[in-house]
Image 1 (tube, helix red, strand yellow):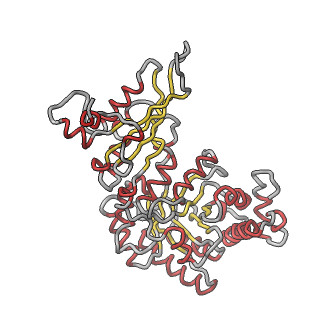
Image 2 (cartoon, rainbow, N blue to C red; image 1 turned 120 degrees about the vertical axis):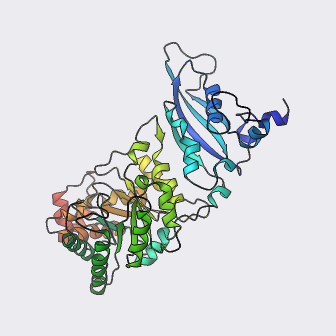
Image 3 (cartoon, rainbow, N blue to C red; image 1 turned 90 degrees about the vertical axis):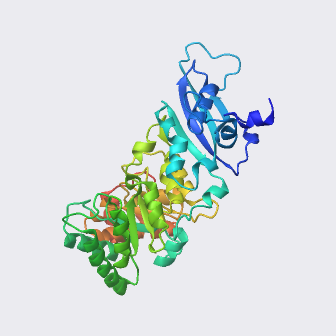
Length: 434
């Protein structure tokens, strides 16, 4: 077989492809034991690149050489060498496919169509990861602010930031939300976000909230000397979502929030890369579980919640934390944060925002697992404080300060009544005497 014939095959050695020209998709496949995984993998590679289920005249050798995807690895687990034991009905495989970058372009919709499009209907196949070449990522601007930029805006150089989600989630009038905003800001919340369930509501308009909340932000800054970012939820149909973003910025909002999977990842990218949008953008994770929760299907969580929203320019991404109400493994949680913060070519790190039932006693564990470059998100953990949201914010800030100083929370709480109240209300969930 000559070189030209080899180049046109849907198969190659891992060492035989130029990693600067290919995106590498890594998959977990659970297949019937009798199914020949190497042949099936090549069929999937053809399906997701140049071919279809029957040969067609247009799929010429020239087209195949330049555009066919290549299977570069099929690894069985366990790795039987001489026979498959009797009674084995299904087998697990890790499959790697190299997709020519030229097929995709520097965009996310065709990326998703290529790496997990029709394959998502092929049974138990899960996309574990995508390895991006440098020149592919070069086409993305990524976060405008990222961790360092948001820290500069708030003048908070080291400690974890504190975010509050206004509760109740929806259904409340503007003035109730404004008072809750004021109290959370006075309590020391660095960021206050709309809940994902309220956007431009008939009973509480988005622009009305921007005007009122930003007035309060200025008043609290004059009183306390601490700024508060308000991430207003601009989620809406297209093109109104873009109008929401620009009008909110024109009215003086200092941050935005978008349900990025509900509206589409590329909609968020269009907003983050818009030169007129000069404020940080927070991406909310709703709908994510439908994409990653299956152990054998969909995409891994670190793609849905980490690498892809960072590529699309989110400065903060809300992620489920394993300490409260979210069902997530700690190592998966940490891997999401790693994909948001570790070096990725020129992209700035994105702030992970662990959320979902977090209370002050959980703060030491959150910081132990992810470090200080996080935004700790809490809704009910602040608003349900027995002394009100101001005390709720203070309790969290006290828990953060204690952890930064290496002081157990129970000891620190003795001189800090706000923290003491919630240590009694929400007993230490980890039983470690924090």
